[in-house]
Structure formats: structure tokens, C-alpha cells
Length: 439
Image (cartoon, rainbow, N blue to C red):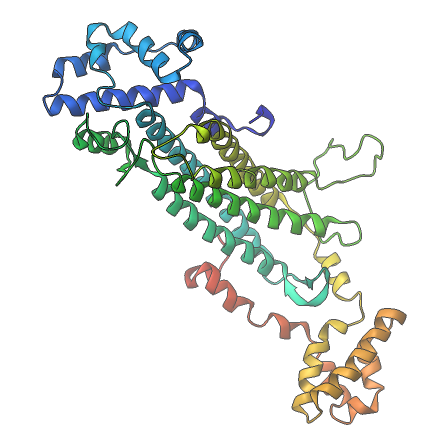
């Protein structure tokens, strides 16, 4: 991933230094396991830990000759260890190192992403309580539907990101597997206890049955989870983008002093951060199909998955890390315009209360079909000619025969639509949080 969209902690996981450090630890832990079993001398295992060093430039130089990265690494490692290096990699195959390393890297990446989601949840919870009672129009198909609150909108996104955290924790658990099982996974030349030893030291679980590789359905599930999270990022970003449109302007990204919106038009305040989040979500979702296609490998293994993972694992995790951090900041500093929300609520003269009037008419004895017809006629007139929906209804004898003027007026009370917001907040945030804003 390019530096523009990389944060240091996540990027470091995928740097050569971190990768080769994990490779070294896998090899050294395997030697410890073999030493405990008496397969190699304990002194040799100690020497590997004590004298083992690697040099990235030297590894690259050796690989240019060998065209094999693991052999290049082992050769360079052996140069610092000396004669005891002959005990490295005994009974192991390259994928034992590569796949176990990838599992460690993905677990570390998942830990950062879980922390990122927690930051998004914190921001969403705070702003949801801040605007729990800020009434705004709910839209379906982009068209005014019925009133809701801005806090309820944010609570919905909070619930989605809670689900995403659960999914990611499950995906992390599934990907946290170790394979030190040899050329085709039979342990022919290495004891299964060595795999168990390495797994325990690295915080992984032994893969129940591997071939030459850890099965790629695990990785496909992991990247699919990242894609779902990215889609939730885009869902919230898209909502903010729509609310920032000039004709709506109910909420907008924070616009800093000195910030410029356009090279040509000084008046512009563009939703550039949320547009950027939409693009980053596309990148993360782009990992899904290649990850799914990596599942089907030839026999016990081929190399078709390797190049794919070398690109998509860093890029998808780095991009999502950046996106989640940016989203938390956008939510935290989001500028909300309650007055504009109220003006938009009133834009169509009260037709947004049509369903409540429909229900009241049916309860008063009017058939649903007849009530719907008369209400739609008056609502369409408001759409086309303006005016107040209530005035039209109060002037229609078909309606007032069933509902008096005062009864009709009561049906236009906004509080009717928000009476269960507290109940929904309890469902989302829990009873302990329902009575007060989040810290």
C-alpha cells in the first residue's frame, strides 16, 4: 500500500524486518521443540537463538541467485550461526515457515483492526447519545419517509460495527493456525510435538490437517470479513456524503481553517474524506475474489496463491486500518445541523405524517383503500402545489367525517415517531448505558 494510506503500526507488520524476524522465531522455536525431543542437541538450539542474525540486503542478494526466498533466508542465517545451522529447518518445508508467519501477521493485523473498530464504536456511541433526540427525516429510496432521529441513525451504525467486531474476532481465531508438518503434511520427517511447541510459543493452534499448506478457506473467510467491515465503512460514509449535499446540508465533514475545497471554486466544501473512504472500501473488497480463488490449489499445493497473498494481505489490512481510523475521526468531528434537519422535515408540508393519518382513519371506520386514495390525492397536491397537508385534510369532508380538526392536528405530533427511541438505545447500548451519554 502506498504511504499516503498507510499507518506506521500496521505497515510495520508487513515490512521485511518483521517478516524475517517471525521466520527466525519459527525456525528457532522448532529447534527448541526438536531439542526437547532429543532430535538435535540442546546446545545447537541455544546457539541458534544466541548467534542467529539476518541481513535483508544479503538475503536479497542470495535470492537473486537461488530464486528461493526461504533458502536465501536460511543460507544467510547459517552464515551467522555456524556449524549448528545444519539443524535448522529439519523435516520442514518452506510453507511451514511462510504459512505460519502469515498467520502471525494476520493475527497482529486483526488486533490492530479490532482496536480501530473500538475507536469507531466509541465515537459513534458518543455522537449517538448527543443526538438521540435530534429529530430528522428518515428516507427510503432517497425520498422523505417518516421522522427518525440522527442519534438513531448513528445507533444503527454502532450496531453494525459491533457485529463487525464479533466477526473479526471470530476470523482472527480461525486464521490463528500453525503448520509445521513437512512436505505434504504427513509429519514424516518431523514430530507433531514440534508443531505444537511452535504453535504454543506463537499464540497459534496447530492446523488439524494440512497438506503442504494451511487450507486457504481460512484466509478466504478472513478477507471476506474485512470486506464486510469495509462495506460498513462505506455505508456510513455514503450517508454522510448524502447529508452533506448542498440541498440537504444536515451534516458535514469538519472543514478546517485554511482548508481548500477546489482549485477553481473558492466556495467549495467537498466531502473528500468520506469519498476517500468509499474508494478505500472498494480496494478492501477487491481482495475477496482472489482470496476465494486461492482456496482451490492443485493437490497438496501449488504456488498460484503466493503472489496474490503477498499483495492483498498487506494492502487490504493497511487500507482498512487507515479507513477505520479516518472514519473514527470523521464521526468525532462531524458537524451536525439540527436546524437544517428541522427545515427539511417541514419541506413537504407535513405529508410525512400520512401513515399515521391512514391508520387513524381506518380505526375510525373508513376502509383502507378509500383512506389511502384520499390521502394520496392530497399528498400529491402538496408535492405539486405546496401548502400544508393538515390544511387540506381539515378542508376535506370525507376526512373530517371520521376525524375532527383537533384529532387531525394531534396526528402531526413529531413525538409520536420518536417515543421508542430510548427503548432502541437500550437494545443497542444496554440498560446501563441508556440513561446517560457515553464517556
